[in-house]
Each structure stands twice: as C-alpha cells, then as structure tokens.
Image 1 (tube, one colour):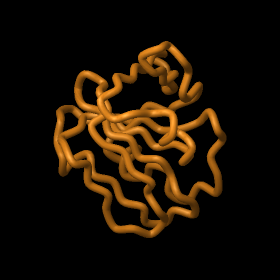
Image 2 (spheres, rainbow, N blue to C red):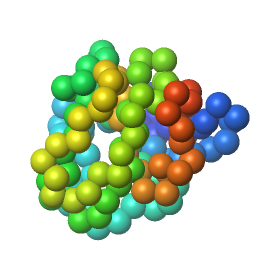
Image 3 (tube, rainbow, N blue to C red):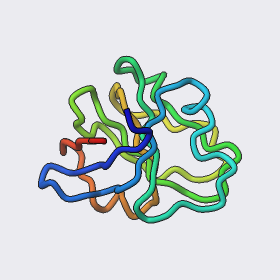
Image 4 (cartoon, rainbow, N blue to C red):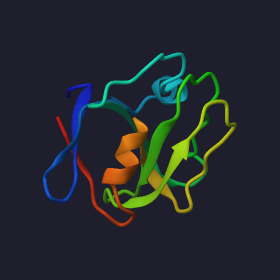
Length: 121
C-alpha cells in the first residue's frame, strides 16, 4: 500500500495531492514537528484504529508554522476543524474522530463541517 494518498471532497476535487498516511504510533507522534514548511498540495493523514476524542487530539510542540487540523469520523465526515498554532499543548476535537488531516491553513476554507472526504492511493 502506498505511503501517500490523495484527499478529495464530495465533488471529487483534489484537496491534497500528496497526503502522507501515518498509522503508526511514532509517525503520528512526530507529525509535522521540526518541518520548516509544507507545500500547498502536501499534508498528513493521521489514522487511528477507532474513533476517539482523546486519541485523535494533537499537539503543536516544536512546530514552526500554523496548520489546518481537520478531524474525520470513521465514515470520512468532517466532525471538527481548527487553525492549530505553534507551541500549543493540545487541540481536541469536539466529537470523536478516527482520522486527522494536517495541512496548510488554506485547506480550512475548502472544507465544511459534515462534508465527507475520501482518500485513495
């Protein structure tokens, strides 16, 4: 299975052409820490084994720039989104999520709560 996915909205529009799939503990923990920048079409998909509020929470320690954080449930529906700022201890979704998308802040304007997103290899 490819380490990268393409993220699309319900209309089939590509939101991220290169989203790295992170399902392992260390990949999720590291996230985007220590990165200096992120391309417009690049991001991370943090994948968890089940829906959870606590497990899908993120931190922004050691981050040099703000990011869009978008939480999806098991069906790919957007349950929350936030502009995550550097050096904040935690961002917790309002509802349980199984996936977290981390990307450039502009993605927040292109995604709506309740919308279904899909990712494919």
